[in-house]
Image 1 (cartoon, rainbow, N blue to C red):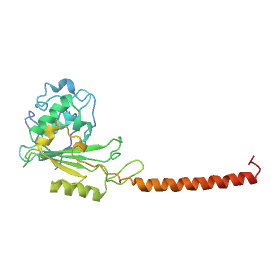
Image 2 (image 1 turned 120 degrees about the vertical axis):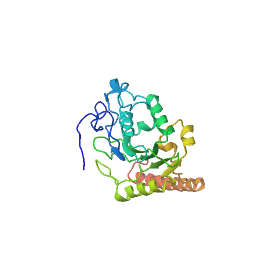
Image 3 (image 1 turned 60 degrees about the horizontal axis):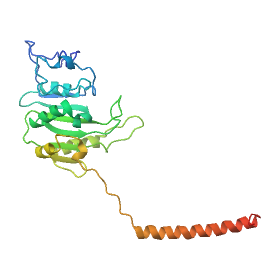
Image 4 (image 1 turned 90 degrees about the vertical axis):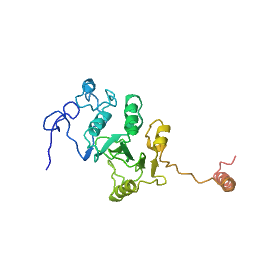
Length: 246
């Protein structure tokens, strides 16, 4: 019940309708495309026969939004949803990428942004994110989940444990803000941030440091000063006994 095609997704997509003119549409689309691919097919994008780049043409040296745009156009109108792994630059880079991102949000297609830990993927140590899009949403909010700090540490590779993954899933299903972990942002909030999706703008993970007790610090300092004086007196006595007290 599967079909595998080996080809160039952007320049020559092979999953097409029987007449060969339109792209096939799916209920679920998921991918981990190459991060910020150079020479992805920019020169031919303006004449794309499938209209995938009507929201804008991604930069020549960064093909992230080319793959996102392709995936969006292969979703079924009512049931289509997708998950794509991206580098964090996709969340906040401006210029043509910013315009595409803004339009996707204004069309109410973006559902969730999930920040992942660093060193999770082979071949790169940078942290990545998962973007979840839906063709038919029931609200215009976007859920931000910062899962970047909860993982099983490894020497060369970090891992998400079953518990880490379950927490992400439970938070996604609940679709509610969780202190220092998740935030449900309204469209207006995202618009106020100029459609920047950088996760720290929405999920506050700041931990307040314990207040310094200055009285205790002063008391400890006086105590250490007295101990130092005692040690210096003892040292002076030892030196005199050894004949260095002239």
